[in-house]
Image 1 (spheres, rainbow, N blue to C red):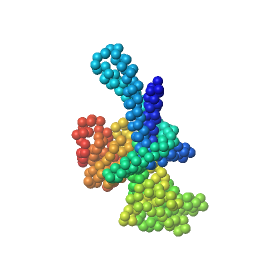
Image 2 (spheres, rainbow, N blue to C red; image 1 turned 60 degrees about the vertical axis):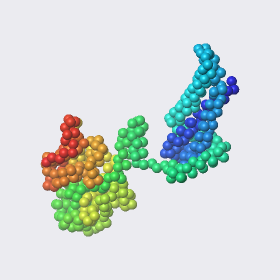
Image 3 (cartoon, rainbow, N blue to C red; image 1 turned 120 degrees about the vertical axis):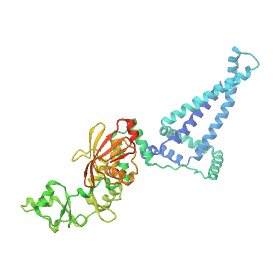
Image 4 (cartoon, rainbow, N blue to C red; image 1 turned 30 degrees about the vertical axis):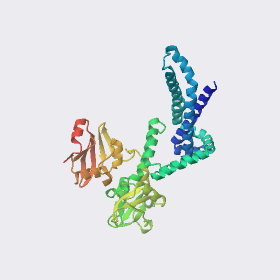
Length: 439
């Protein structure tokens, strides 16, 4: 009976050490930090153990190997008499003793594999942080008790690792790919709602998108000339009611300042004609280079009190205008805007009318296309068409990519105003035409 109790105790100890090993190794540092921030001291202990795991793993291996050896010795002695009786019922030849030994060995090995290894490790993998927090204090105590053995084996292991130039501690680095993987898992599980998933994805894209994908392009900027008369100013305000207007001297590259439309409204309320005066023009303007990412642009807006910025290229030419609202909309808004002119209009299940200035990242999301060729060379769908054709497109020019046909249907001079994007429903035709350019 004492041998049976000994086997049971060894199995329980083996299960404890197996659970401890897997749970502490598999615990996610992000979740442990959340638990630690909530005041869980044991979570902090687990983090410290993960940062310096050498002594812990040395203790685990010493303990598991000792248990395995003792289990083999005690188990064979305990079970062989019982297996001998069972074998004798069906066989009493010269091999009876060997058969009894093999059966007892298989039985004890199966018990240890099932109850001291597989089951506890499965439990630890299911809820690693919870298990690790429960066992960390006991494991630290056992490590301390086995200090001489732990120091010897841990030092030897570290020496071997240094000889082969292998790091002795784990470096915990959370990459963008790790975050995306967690987002995908959360969305699949249902713990992360679709709207939250899309919002976080848009935020992560801020570092990969430049100002060109969010700004109002140069040709769409409405501005006042310093020499504009009252009728011209009033007409521009009525046609394009913005809060702020740039003021130029002849053309956009000769900026004078900016003016608020409410100052024009004040003139009208006072019964005066709308006109520009020196006092109402704000001379200080906020400039941003077009090479900035949306994330960098947001940081620049944080340090100023300006409502908009003029985007310039390396030659100091104005290429666009961006507002803080534009930047916020780049990750708060949907692919298809609710107010104003829509950039993407779905015609049917397999075709869309897309504005040429639509950011290529939005098109990739809409069509679920993983990549466009050399997408670092352009920001918009029109830019992709120009890049693929190697010239300014004409009407009906098209490019086929990844099973979609991108056709220019509205070209104003050298500007591609609108494209028709069509999904090629015949898979064979799509494969055959892949990468083709037509004009």
